[in-house]
Each structure stands twice: as structure tokens, then as C-alpha cells.
Image 1 (cartoon, rainbow, N blue to C red):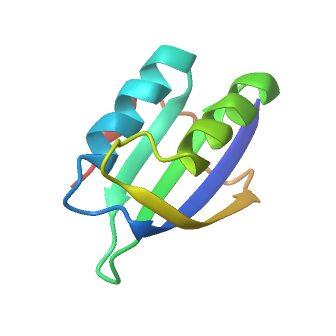
Image 2 (image 1 turned 45 degrees about the vertical axis):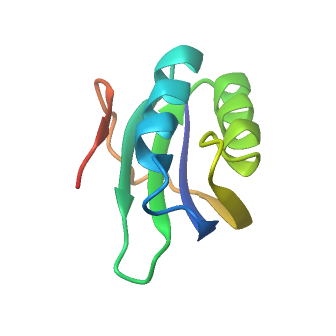
Length: 91
């Protein structure tokens, strides 16, 4: 299992980004969380098999929201992330 944390910067709040991220995660089959941050970015934790995580990251970099725009997507592996049972929006 691969565990990553992702910080997404761009036009990612107020455009349905978290909702669309959840749809993509459910479709690909990864678990985790997505939430808005006070600085205007979006924070994601994702857990799943390597190939599914790579597909998820690729989809996030393209912006799952049609009206969103991703300027930067910082990805880091983090084994301390919990094993989520599903993918959910936390705020």
C-alpha cells in the first residue's frame, strides 16, 4: 500500500474540487480524505495500491473539477497516514 499526502494550489476552492476529488477517488478505488485549507489550498491524504495512487495523482494534477485550475501539486509519501476505510470530505 502506498500512502501519500498531496497539497494542491490554484483555483481549487469554491469550484467543486473536493467533491470531484472524492468522485475520482471512488472511481479509481483509493481511500483517504480531502479538505480545504485556510491558505486557499486543498490537502489530500490518499491510500491504495501504487498503480491506483499514481492514476489518482495524475487525475488531481489535471484538476478533477472542470472550473478548477491546478498551479502546483506537491506529493509526499507518508507511512504515518492511517488506513482509511473510504474516501471522504472532512470540511
